[in-house]
Every structure is written in C-alpha cells, then in structure tokens.
Image 1 (spheres, rainbow over the protein chains, first blue to last red):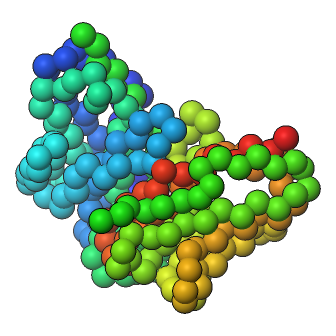
Image 2: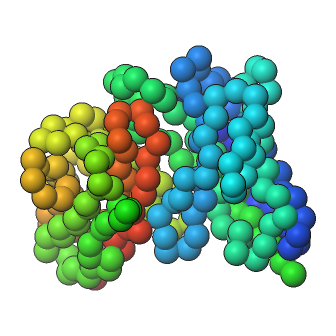
Length: 115
Length: 113
C-alpha cells in the first residue's frame, strides 16, 4: 500500500485559501487519491477523489501533477467550521483486487482556522 | 437518503464482558468495512465484509474479535472478554462495490472500565 506524507498541522484565517499537500512517492498505476475530513467525535467524511490532473467539486479542488507522486487539496475561502483533521489516502479504485479495499489512514493534517 | 448508521454511539463495558457493535450500511451498499481509531491516531483497518462473506480480515486481532454481515440485518462487530486496551472509537464504512468510495458512520465509542 502506498505510504502518504502530509504536514501534521496548518493554521489559517477565515476567508483564506488553504492548500494541503500530500506526497505519495510509491503510488501504483491503479491507485486513486482520496481525501477525507474528520471532526472530533465524528466519522471521516469523504471530500474528493481523483486519479490525475484536476478535480473540482462544490467543496474543494484536488490537483495532481503528471507524475502523481503528490497531490494538493485546495479549500477555497475557509471558515471556522473547516477546522478539522484532513486525511490523504491512496487506495486501489475500481475493480476489486485482493487487499485493495482497506484504506490506510495516517495521522492526517490538523487544520486550524481562526478569525 | 440515510447514511451509514451505527449503534450504540457510546458503549461502556467492564473487563471480561462482551461488546456488540452494529452497523447498517447506506441503502444499496453491500460492502462493509470496520476501522478502529485510538485517541490522536488515524483509523486502522480491521475487516472488510460483503453480505455473508468475510473478504479481508487482515486487520482483526486473532483472538476475541469477530465480525459478520448476515443476509438480513446489520453488520456486527463482536468483541469478547473486553480489556481496557479495546477502548477506542470503532467506525464502520460502506461502499456500493469493492474499490468504490467508502462512506463512514458516526462511530461507536467503546469504553472498557
């Protein structure tokens, strides 16, 4: 399973754009990159998933360079309610393959948004 | 459109008792995953099940822990003879198919006294 590395913590202010970068040097050809958000005492919430280039939804954007060895989660105009832990995961997507469905969570990035 | 449901949300057990944690997947999802989270740590995979089948239990402790996902009803994670080290948050996730996006429930917080 591809190992991911992301900053332990980040601080920001309301209204700013936040970019969290994750490195995954040994990502495999069939791996997808997925980001989850977790608030205290809650389960992780799916934010966005991508394979290459750029993906955008109503919550965030995900930028993936051509070599796919890293990815950047971009949160536009954060608010206090975006204070949470953000996890970057690399996992096999699509067709079921043995061992490919278990998500491997690191310690994530603790984002703190202040006024 | 209800999400993944877990109950109970909080469970207190004394050492040696049994703990039963339930998970109802999202409607239409037939793949269930269980994860455990210790304080200040990320989630750790325990087991992956489809209806009536255990697909991957590589993260399950060899003793005292078992999981099932019957044809009818919720998935059950069962911990026998609990010890203090079992105190953690247990999360269930479900997906439409293997390899698809996993959606998590609110978790069950188990406290062993």
